[in-house]
Image 1 (tube, rainbow, N blue to C red):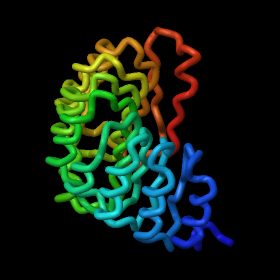
Image 2 (cartoon, helix red, strand yellow):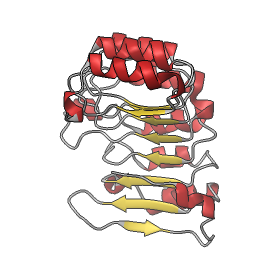
Image 3 (tube, rainbow, N blue to C red):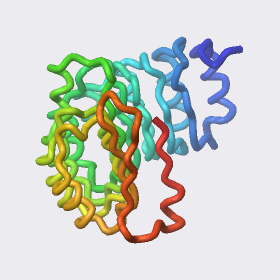
Length: 242
């Protein structure tokens, strides 16, 4: 059976057996899943599940309930989900890892900033890459204001991917320079709006920032910049797939 054809009944049967000890579950691409799948997750994995990759068509009601019930969740991949709105951010607990890439609609920036204010102190990895084809009015949500909120509320942030966020400028990078925990920053497709002094200040403020990826829009060249410090072995575990 193709994983894309997994039904609510299939997942429920699996979780009934494995759910009480399940640590990680990837459901991205499972287009046949619906509300019953979310109920099964709540029922069978609420005390064990730490990593969850969501299916794209989950509803906001199901996702909000899931986030409320699964108290152990630390890593959430919501890339491509259609249901990221204020209801979801209100239900979201503290996370170590959050992927909000390729959202087909504008996310609620006000609700996201409110979540950062409440729960951002533990966030260590944020991947926030909008679709390459997105209306300019929606792309404006990914801007310097987000950078300022991250700097204010996320002191433990180590990995940040804001590729294709073309409304991030040098002002946003200077705001991120208020952090001192960053290790990896990816800004592919953003460099047209960012100057070198702001990038250097970001490096100066973050002594463990060992890698930055930059790529101008419309090119395939990636400039990888390394400060003088050598990479630690712990940094080798940081992997970004994009």
